[in-house]
Structures are given as structure tokens and as C-alpha cells.
View (cartoon, rainbow, N blue to C red):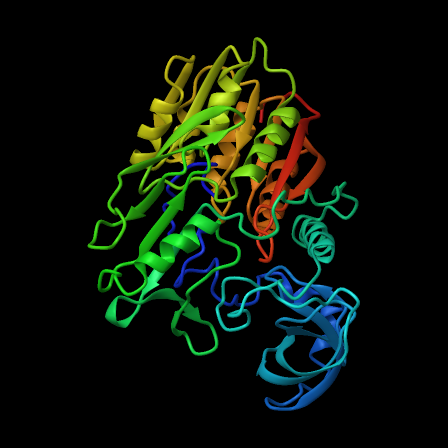
Length: 441
């Protein structure tokens, strides 16, 4: 998530619920999945189960990507829609050198954490992966995923990872949804089983007014164009883009959201955090982790539409925001008007190296791909006293933490997972790095 309110360069990086990108689509294995448990050196000696073979599996955990994990013959087996504690009969549909993938044929013994999904399309639509698990089990699994990624990718085997901060709403929390067009104006998502259009008439994780809008728009969608529907609980307004003929108004160019009593304007093309109430908790958490701001110069890299930037600027002596998207940068300037803020339009990896004034504190909120190596090296050269990293992907968080701590200048203090996306595998996390060696790098 490139900032709490940005338009990410990568269309797959904004975690909007949509039909064609990686956020809702049934996930391929995360890069770290093949290393789940077991000894890598022993894997090649174990015969692979052939495609189509049925295995009896005890599911033990959830992987980064939302699939349950089992062990069979020393190899990991990844099972969609399984819950830790399930005993399942599963058919292998894909083999890899170090792991296999299998689909559930029968749940022989139900996990105590298995529940009935609320969505009629669950398991067909690819938007959610965890509706079959109790919410407490989802929170536990997400914490464990963060800890596992930090250990396996980052080498932080004793990292302090706090319990996941729950969302105030488990369903009905999304203020933004993007629908795929089908034939005859139909709107929907993707049938992940066959990678085809799936008409949907209700989405339980979307805010109720978005579902009301979907009913009005169904059958009116513009041919070949995605339809984005956004809702502000502050004003009750809807933004529906692009403009097309429908029973309700469409083509609005901006919408106003509210976080912690402040209003933020977001253009139609600008990303804004989709879980408004949990975003308030995320902002408060990040500000708390930054520490006292009085007299400080603070850098907000990947600042998006300026949500973090505005709150930082209310307490800091000087604030600098960097944002690549011209639209989001323009929104940020409007949202921080009247405060001591410099918004720099450009890529973080380019602009960080050009910064001249000393920076005391840094907030990073990069897209899912994480920070470019050049950005990390520039941060090390800036040597702020603290870096607060807001991540939307545990794997790239672990990778970037490893880079930042590799010189011995910084130490990872702790990590707080935040559930911005209940019922899905996506995980937000706030990590704190403190300088332990203030030296020239």
C-alpha cells in the first residue's frame, strides 16, 4: 500500500477487492512457502506424490498466502480453504520440487476453529481466503505468518511480534470495491476455479451502501471497463467511476474520507485505505511508534494522499513527504495545506538520495513490493534515529528489515500486526527500527 492514501504504480499492489489482480485472486505460493517446516536438504530424497493422488493430511498452520499447511513425507503440502486442526482427505493437483498443492476432497475431522462462511460465493470468488476460520484463529494465524517470515527471510528468530490488532468490523468494512464487467452490463469478480467472470450480487466484506449501489448498477456496467465504487461514512457520499449511464449518479471525481476527526480528499484514481475505522488505529499506532515529534524533522516516504503526513506535521517542526503518483501528491498538498510540509513528487529511491537536511525520524509505507534497494541504502546514509515501517506484505517486510539491520546501525525493536483485511490473507504490520550506532554508513 503505497501510503495510506496513494495510487500505487503497480496495479496489483493496492489490496482493493477486484476481479483481476493479485489481491483477491487465488494466490500462487508465496516465495517463502516451500520452506515451511522440514529440512530442505532432505526434500529431494522423498518420492513425490503423483498428481491426482489422494492424501490424508493433518493441517498444522496457515502460510503466507492464506493456505493451510500439512507435512507429507517430509515435504510441505499447501491446501486451500483448510484450517489448522483439520484432518482432511486432499487430492494433489500440482507438484513442485520442494512442495505440493492439494485440494480438499473431504474434511474427515473439523478443526474447532472451522466456521461456516458468510458469503454465498466463498470458495468460488477469489477475494477471501479465510472466511472458514473463526476470527480469533485468523488473528493468531496472521501473527504467526509475520513471525515466520521474519525468521525465515529476515533471520529474526527472536523478533517481538505482538498479537494481531483486530479490526473493529469483521465484515462490511470495505469502503472501496472494484468490479469486473461481464456480458450485458453485469458486474462481479473472478471465478478463481476457472479464471472467468463471476457475477456477484452482494459482497459481505463491502460496506452496506456499496452493496446497495451494486444492486442499482447491476446490468448497467460499461463494456470492458472496471467499475470502482467507494463510500465515505463521513458524508454518506458514493464515488462511482468511470462515468456511465445508470440509475444512480456516476463519474464523481473525488470523495472525502475522515480519519480521527480530520478530513481527507481523495481523487477517483487515488488509493485510500479501504478499512476506515481500522485505518484510524493504524495511524494512531504509527504515531505512537514514532515517539515525540516536537522539534523533529520527519520524513514520510511513500506518503500517498498525506494521511500520515498530516498527523505528523501537526506535531513535528518540519515534515517532508515523498510520493510517486502525481494525483496522490496533488491530493496530499491539499490535505496538508496550512502545515509546515514539503511534498516532493517522485520515486522514493530517487528523492531520498537528494535529501540534504538532517532527518530525525522516518515513516515508511511502501507498496507490497517493499522498498527498492536504492531507497534502503539512502535511508542508511540519512541515519535517522528511528524508522517506523508500515508494511502490507510480511515477506518484503522481512527482506527490508534484514537489509536495514545488516550493517549493525539499526535493531528491530518490535512488530505489531494489524488486521486491515479480515477474511483475507493480507496482513498489515508496523515495525520499529531504532538506531544503535549513529555513525557514517
